[in-house]
Length: 509
Image (cartoon, rainbow, N blue to C red):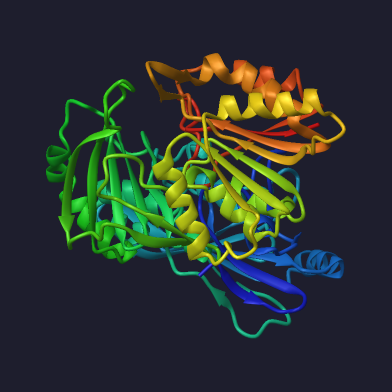
């Protein structure tokens, strides 16, 4: 559960590890911005948890709440109880009064449980200084597991969790369950805990808004693979073509069985990704396990539903890395003329239509994708308005046609208020023709700008991980008055030393 408590003044949230309290820069999403984007909650920061820390986090819902919270903290009227994992210590309970940054503070420690290699401790504070528990634990000789900054051993997350908060005016303490990976660590299952820590950063937090998310991102775990959850099924993508789907399934069967138990899944499919775009199928090697997977089934984001297929040799039908982008589109699409280029199965179009866009053009050369897009429109009961237009055409030709219309009749041409342009890295266009995103990007950017209204917005994206990101950004930045790089969703984090999974740009005229 994401929301632990809410009244007219206070909101308490179960924050996952891996997301900051508020954004570090424009284009990023901290928890404050995530709540606004996905749950329409406008909150005020009253206290903070570090990006790696999970658990109970208090926000204010009014400006008065912020000043009241400050007084409560200064008067030490609140009590916050944390748990953390660190190496074993012979001491059972103690207090650390070491001043931090020239300011007095006290942390009360107590050992809760000894494990095979590590112990779980409790830390209680009345008000918090910067990294207070982490610094006091390190000063006490037990730096936290995963806290490299203060001398702790490496791990997939900072093993610190705010398990309860006692707050004046709210009856009883508010609890957030201790992460399961903490218990697994104590039991000696450090290998299982290493991947479980990543899973718990996303599930069940994202279940608040969707039944689809990435559980394990590529290169996070020790395997070159990714694991996605679609409803009650898992979809595993292996990126090493030398390891067959059946081999990968056999090697990871225990982990996948555990994931099914944790996430309530009934089975899934393993696919081997083919890098060579000239091959006929994106996925040429497939293995399945568990119950029989339906040929197609529905998944949801917010109140919208999408048909997906796991058994096919092409993509599932819904790109999870554009979840936040779809919500951003929905926020501004009302009453606007929208063009969704390279529309695929039209998920952006669904969001725009549901937000009451004036008209939405979905343009794609693949008739099968457009057909699925039309089905998605019907599933969400959005067809009756007559403002969903499906155009089976090469996007480049469609753009050229719009430019001719504007040139031949500038007074009659009606520009678009919002354009989404999310092209594939490579695609066959028939008759020996092909599409390469790096080659086509400049002409796409110029054409999109020319069909936009004076205050129009364009969302560009691509997942060309072998390309030069600066080229894509600079091309757009030379055309539009403002270009903002957007980070992918929480479950598609940037992995150190590697290119971002997807590049997303918000462009304003």
